[in-house]
Image (cartoon, one colour):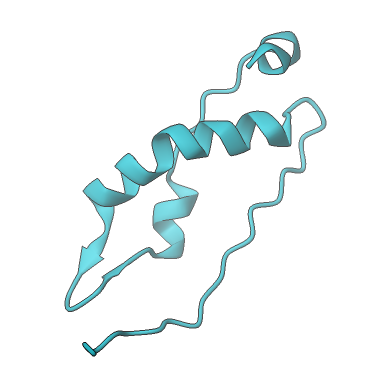
Length: 70
């Protein structure tokens, strides 16, 4: 069995704006976040995601009507 690293950090994304659908943000992150992180991740022996990387991830927010269609 090989070695592995376990990091004890978890991040919570909390949507505070009423006109932003959490479902829209979820689907947007599923589609784009992994690609973004793979370009930005820091690598040593294990790739890691840092808080500023999450904070700097941009999500374009369309109108509430458009969000509901997605």
